[in-house]
Image (cartoon, rainbow over all chains, first blue to last red; front, side):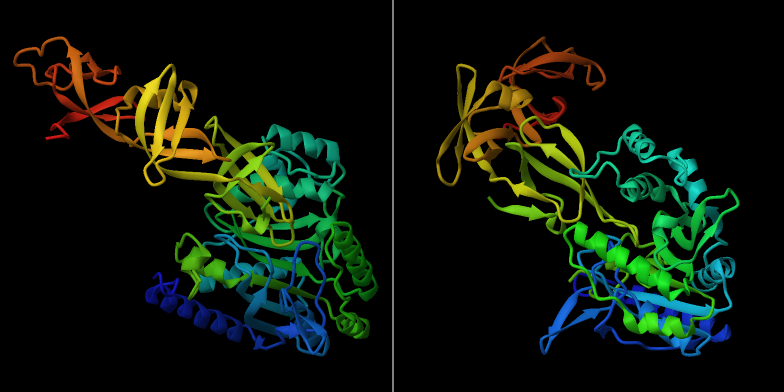
Length: 315
Length: 192
């Protein structure tokens, strides 16, 4: 085990999970695709660092997810595609993180958030034999476990709540960093309590954390993101969207991401013009989802960390 | 001064904040996929022994502390201070009664302890978890009473008073847990 990270038994179970996964997508009419790992463009995100490489004086990035290219394939007329590939996120290392990991990502035209969540749930039940997932809105989860409404609370109220929950604020935390406070409360006090028995799918994240999801109005009248995440035993397993299809809105959000990156002292990233052009041509309404396969395998096999679920996970 | 940035954070790291040395005894990396990375740390104050929770965000850093730990022999005590010697360099270090704390009750000349030194100054000492010490005084053993649940105070050769079973006699050797001050068992003379 010291030599390989995962034991041969684990690797054989992992292989069976992959076979079941491909069968699941096959049965549901998905085509398996492959897209570049190394590319001149990325989708800039505030808190994700794609590793940069330099070839012949031109920069290329290892992709943090296959989203950019898979959406271009959807726009080009492929209505149901999936991929099992590697993704790369710099500086993420811990029992539940590794800079290189196996991601499963899929898109299906015609799906919205509800059908997207249903497909994710069905996949986990079929492949990893999970019990049916519970569905909870992000707002409800925050109200239950942190006693605060994430949509209506002021930043002062969030700050006060963090103190009451005995969270020590990181030095230099901006007093008006609303998403920063939401992230502290969610990551430290809420997420560890989500999905303790059956997997739990949270949906309707704050509009400010929409990333590439459509923004909509929830039944309580708040602006929310049509974004969902599956959390199982406190571990985030998958993240999905009712995909944003409006190129102008995406350009506005990405410019905003780059402004925030620069304000935080990190370099801005190139805007993915190829994706924006494809969306201008027309990205049909669809739902997409990305699943951390190492984490699903770890949880399905009852292992304590990713290192035991991957070959050479200790190196 | 060397620093550790958040992506070098790990359990066991010795760092200093405002001139106080700490050891990182726990580090949890938490990062929601779309959210900011958080490093949840438990820091042990190496001088006072207290533990503090701290949260850091990616890109922050902590100053490295010049802290070393090595085996040192207890030599002697004088006027409320205790003198130890590094077993390898033979360098001597003097600690105050406050720095030695409870451990002083079980210090016997020649005992190998773990000494913690910060910027060349000794700050803490830990004796072995178990030591064997001779009983200097106790009431006579109750005849025929071999039950271990009846206890009486006994005074050890270092002056420490602990509770031991009623069958213990003056001159017996006892194995004692230095963390709790509890009697463990009667032992052979370690010198014999």
